[in-house]
Image 1: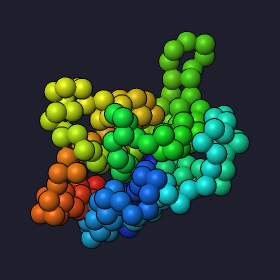
Image 2: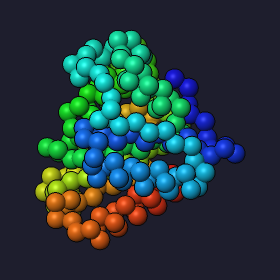
Image 3: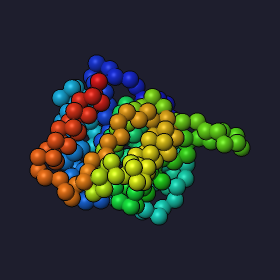
Image 4: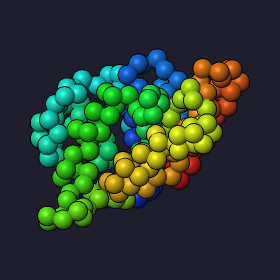
Length: 202
């Protein structure tokens, strides 16, 4: 897998993946505002929603595109196309939803996202040259999640997902508590997402 191109005269390529199983969610609204900010700065944006993807969560995880349904192939193609990737997901039991995790399990396959070298523990990071943001929505306040649980969702995305395949994490943002948030707070989060999109386009 070759590295993504850098910014060009037509703007950066940004792939936004809404990893929420429901179409009508705060995650989707945050993704839309991020996209608006990125487009305002000249970025090219592609968008996929977990709620619209059709695939077998228990399907095989093989090499490259082998054994993948069309939606997972399209997801891989969008990742390969992108200079920058945004993942937006809710925080359920210290992680993303199981169906979203299945996309990573099957889509970030050997030969596409990484490749082990020889018989040792080394590996090649095949998605180098890309950067990534993540927005996580949670009922757990982020400060409590940090102090009490040591922010597992943010650590896994930064270290075991992005870094493992060579994507340079820029901003891993957790927003909460969603269930306690008043409309003014939610609007502030939407503005944050828009500003992040603007930064990603540069």
